[in-house]
Amino acid sequence: MSMENEIIAVQQLIDEYVETPESSEALAEEQFIEMIAKRVEELMETNMELFFNHLYRMDVSEQKIFRALHPATELNESVYMTLARIIYERQKQRLETKKKYKQKDIDFWADDV
Image 1 (tube, one colour):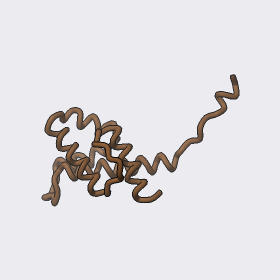
Image 2: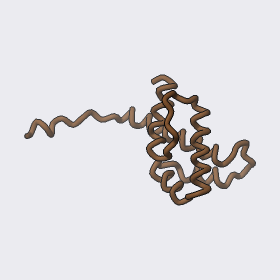
Image 3: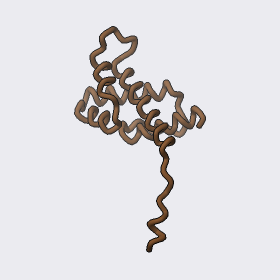
Image 4: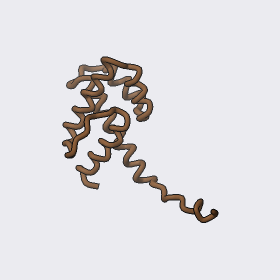
């Protein structure tokens, strides 16, 4: 899968949860992460419960979230951007897992009828 197709696939996974604005063209990875960061900021400022619900549904590591929200050292980027990167990477992992364990359609149900 090309990098552009991978970005599009990850965008689609994330769009299911975060509702990022649609785009007819694939965005560069960094631009897409910035879009996620803006949505993360918006949700954290307006509805923290919904934000954490989205993270739970996306199965984002609680440890990574905790480290992003309670950094031991000074971050070179905003918490929103750090969380956006964590979300993006988790969705890439989910995409790889789906490809690796893709199941064939179950056709035998139709044969019994």
